[in-house]
Image (cartoon, rainbow, N blue to C red):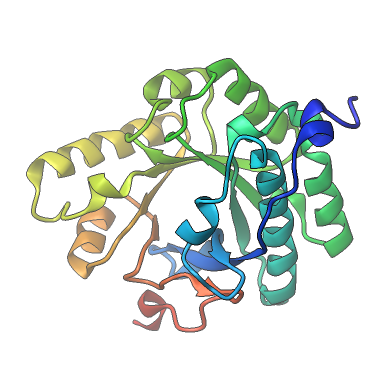
Length: 250
């Protein structure tokens, strides 16, 4: 196996310090936390834009690697010992040069911190133009290692149904634009209903994100969605897990 790919040799270090916030993903059926998603923040809790604006082609690899390390280290420190929620980490397919080589630091960090690899979900967004074959190699490698996989912002980007026909991840996150006002928009309800049914037929878990109102939650629950994420339940919490998740209090 390649121990060091070209990205390790040529990539520059990321030029600014940053940290992570954690936002819960809730199972509304049984009232538990299914996972926490790690979201980039500035070193003092500044918004993601303050960090992402510094990401460029020459430091993309370093940024992606540091995100994984920081997320795992934070989760191993703040996750309740009596629980074993999953950790969802975003990754940039275009920052992965060779899947088996680029995952080594992630595996080393998980081993060092004692965080189980089986509790890690790697999700990627469709907002980058993607080489489908490259993405498939990454996802297949991650599955072989034992990670869960997810597609983020489904329905809003480049991959879509073409990728889904070739690889079925564990989870598909429906884009929040489909979810916004789904309770009052019959067209969105139709799209979500059929998308959720399609995913379940393929053995994929649907997850709806960006939920802000109780009306949206109730409609989605009626459509068969169990996993949800959004401000209705909790905003992202800087360097900590949410203590007061609104839905779990009812």
